[in-house]
Image 1 (cartoon, helix red, strand yellow):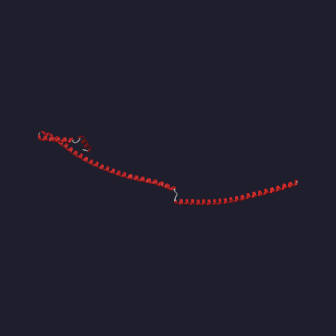
Image 2: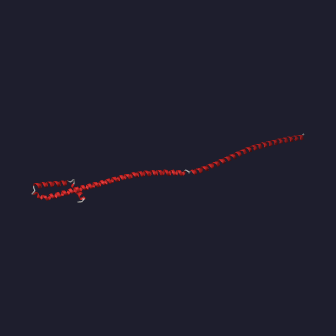
Image 3: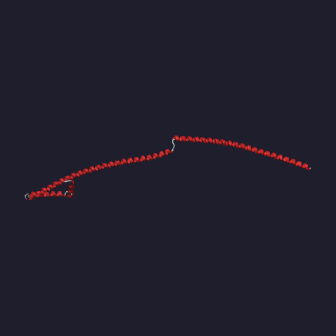
Length: 202
């Protein structure tokens, strides 16, 4: 009898009430056989058949018990396997979370590094800075030199302008003196001419 048949029989039998009835029947028939041996001889085949059915039922119960035990072991093994898989899955999840956290940290560090690298690229290197400072220093020195030259030229021009003003003032005074002398000479000539005219009229 295979397991499927045993299961069907167990389901049909319920809680084993059929076995109890068989034992009650056997007990009743045996008591009847003991009390009335002769008339009850015809009950022997029925008794044997019922005993065989009871033996089969007992074997069935043994098989069902063994099957249940085997299934319990299988379920226990399956449960242990599932629990182990759950533990492994939790461990993997924990490792994955740590790796994700590390990856996020690495990504953040990478972004900060790239930002810092861009900032460093914008800032010239020390030799480049020194070179530019030297150029600026040289340009400042040239500008100071040009400023000194311009100040010198401006001072010279101021001196020349002052001298020119002095010369111009002297020249104007000289012209004014010449003009005064000429006017005086003209007045004297005019007076002499007037006197000559008066003498002629007299």
